[in-house]
Amino acid sequence: MSYTIHGIQHLGVGVPEHAPAWKWYRKFFGLDIPLFNDEAEAPLMTIYTEGDVISKRAAMVLNIKGGCAMEVVSPSTFKATHAKVEHQLGDLGILVGFIKAPDVLKAYEFFKKNGANVISEVVEDPLENDTFYVKDLNGLIFQVITANDFYTKHSHVTGGTAGCSIGVSDMEKAISFYGLLGYDEVIFDQTNVFEDWSTLPGGDKKYRRVFLSQQNPSGGGFSKLAGKSYIELVKDVNGRKPTKIYEGRLWGDIGFVHLGFDVRNMEALGQRLEEEGHGFTCDTKDILSMGESTKVHCTYCEDPDGTLIEMIEVYKIPIIEKLGLYLNVEKRKPSQPLPDLMLKALKFTRIKD
Image 1 (spheres, rainbow, N blue to C red):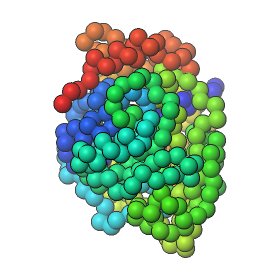
Image 2 (image 1 turned 90 degrees about the horizontal axis):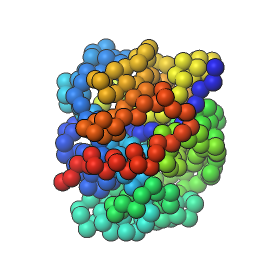
Image 3 (image 1 turned 135 degrees about the vertical axis):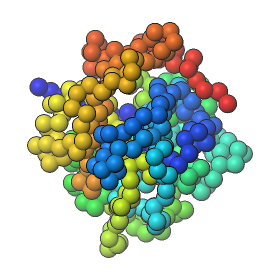
């Protein structure tokens, strides 16, 4: 039986205080449409929370302009904290999140004018596109990247998320793993000291940097909204032993807690991942019901260095719950995008500040 990985669904972010963090993401990243925003226990994650079932508030939020989602996670049974050391490029895990923008200079001016902690000028990335880097309220680093595949002409200066940068210890193993997840197109593979990283921790050193995307995206309900997404793999080639970003820490602590993928046929995918040595570390085993309106199947696996990857098979989620509009995936072809009318109706659920 075959499986489908549509692509990146969301980037998970751990924060200490949910309300101010999400407000910042609404203001600067336009992530003002919640698919859900609930307080609940996380029994699936006990392997990553020292055996304890924690409670957390989590919101899955979108930008109607386009891009992938963000899951904003804030533990309520413990206070999310920073790592005890400052991590740098090449450390194992997700260090930088990507945000897409049609006009990077315009976004940069908006961020500066509105007091964001912008940590670089507008510089060229290895593809000679404009980019800049900014820290959020909790010091997490985001890269605003140039894009032209937006779903609507919404006025916000950025779209949503578009992937992330992941530190790895063995580049070939990492390329193979993320190729298995559908990110099989190498856009560039360079080893250098990179100018656009000059203001990042460790950015004055040499790294191997591999930028991946999907050669043949498989579509899916939110594919028109999500657009292209990317995974950047970073290996330190300076002889330094990289450290794990979440070593000795809990899922939900401040940082990028996982990268989430939209999939179909979880059972077949699990068999393939098991064969490749990346079997599920935790699994809801069946449909997870989040009330009457949301039904999903969630699993986690790890990349070769332990970076957390979430797999989500959606069966039913609300589009506009008040109007009775739901996405029931079981009745749709896996590759079929949602109708424009349904996607654009999401704007009626926007949270306005």
